[in-house]
Structures are given as structure tokens and as C-alpha cells.
Image 1: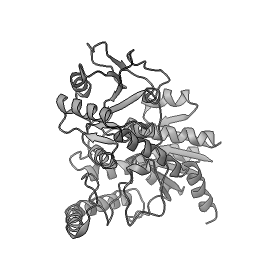
Image 2: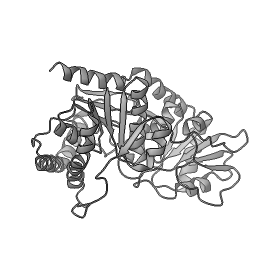
Image 3: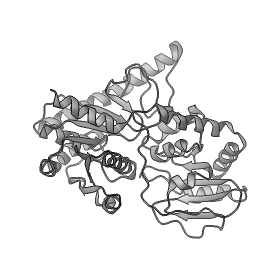
Image 4: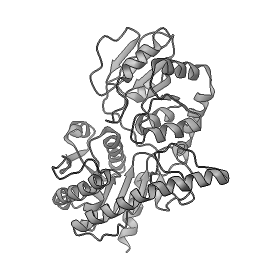
Length: 387
């Protein structure tokens, strides 16, 4: 099966796409990843073919003040830029990242079945949940359900506007205005981070986190026997700035060692009980007692899958939603706003209370319940073949 996997270059989306390509390749399929050039060498080292996803650069006509318009109009543009490369590849199936909707549009234009990859929980609106992004638990009782209904009503106009923008963008590239959606959705998260909903789509499947290590290098933690705290600043542009400096200030004299895992250059002047740099996070997590991170799904899921609780310092985007889900699960504490005193208190509390680790280990056990994303992709193709 030839599979085109389409994802933007942001690590939170490119890494799950790379992981899916690796799974497809191991199953004997032929994946080709369309993404930004930043990850071409990483893909090649893993034996994955990568090609340039054209159309990613912002255009003069894009309205960054209107997120819905920007997403849908740019998706239509990307679909046009991608179409010649996709046509030349002759894919049997397209997998399109949820934020890189142009991949799905291009697949439709080519007449090829496609699957949506969500590298986080399912964020579709639900008639039984408060709006995604609020961080709220589903309301209970008459007042709780009424609260959720009011909040849904307040966001309904924006959702309708987004549907109109998407319809206009689709029509602009010759597609029917009504969006049929993907043949399946791969929800690449742990069951512990999902929220039950009465209207779960039948074609949406929780497949577990699709995790990727961008390096084979190992970052050795500082020597000693004190508990190891792994810090991973957010890779998203909406993440909290200055996390490394805040954590170092917070944990000075706290009786811990700190390893800072980051893609970028570490800040200068770190003390001897801190090690920082690029290294495999899965290796660091084997020794970690606590993780401090921004609440991005990749690190959160990786930490929980390793049975390590998290101090979450959420920024923007979906980090607030994810932080609250993990906190309600009992495997995380939220620090907001970010202060050294609050970070120190949260780390020391997790170290002192074993219930947080027990909850993280329970989240890890949920991996036994997930579906196989490769089997789902094959099933989509099989069903398309008999139509």
C-alpha cells in the first residue's frame, strides 16, 4: 500500500506523522511523508522517504487575525500545491494531519480515500461536553449540564462561521461545499486523556500515542542518587517562555537532579546539578521521578506512557485543556501562573505523594486498550476497494 502522510513541520505534528510512517513501513507498506525540510534528514536516517510539503509559507492574502479563515483558505492553497506531487506518487491512501487539512482536500480532489491523524485527543465539538479548550470537566446535575449548554451556545456562532469558511474554501478548489470528512480518524492519545462523550464518531479510533525520538543521542543526567526531574520546554510557539530558568531557580537546593531535554540550544550558565541538551526522552524517562513540561500532548503522553507524573506549566493552544485532563486523572499538577515557588511546591508534592505515580502508571496500562493505526488504514483501503 502506497501511503502519503501529510503533516506540517511543527514537532507536535511532524513527530507523530514520522512515527506512523515508521509503523507503516514496518508493516510492509510504502509511506511517503510530505512535511517541511527540517525533518528530511531525520526521516532519511529512519529509511522514510520525505518530500517537501509545498504551500506552507504564509501568503500576503492570509488573514492571521481570523484563525478559521487562515486554516481553511491555506488548506485549500496547500491542496493545490500538493496535488501534482500527490498525483505523481499514485498513493492508495492519504493520511492528513488534523491541522494540515490540505492533505485531505488534495486526496478528495484526486479521488483517493483519506484518513485524518489527530496527534492528541479528539477535539470535535460534542453535544455532551463543554467546549474544547475550556479545560472544564463535563458538567453534572442540572446546573452543570446547563452551564455546558450555555458555553456551547456561546461558541456555536464561531463553529458555524468555521463551517462556512471551510465550505467556501472547498468550493474555491472545485470540491463540494459540504465536507464528507475522512474515512477514519486516528486519535493518537492514551485512553486516560480522552473524555467519554455521547456522540463519539463510529469512525474515530483511539490508537495510542504515536511517539518519535528525533535523535539517537543520549543525554546523561547529572550524577547522583537524588530524584531526577526531567524538564522539557514546549516546542509550540504558544508555550510558556523561560521555563528552564524558572525550574532551575525553583529546584535549587531541593535535593533533586535536573535534566533538560530540548531541541534548541540550552541557556548558558546552568549549575552542575543540571544537564541540558538534545537527547532521547524515552531513555531519560526510565530514570525520571517527575517531569516538568508545558502540557503539549507529545511530552504529556510520553511521560504517562512511561508511568511518570507531570508538573504541567501550560501555555496557549490546547495545553490548558490537556493539563486539566491530566490533573483530573490524578497524574499531574497544574502550575499557572508560572512562578519558581509554585513549581517547587508542585515537584516536591509529587515526590512526596505516591498517588501521582500510581495514576501515571494506570494511564500507561491503558495502552493495552488501543487500536492498531496500520490495521485501520488497511481497513479503509479494503472498504474503498469493494465500493
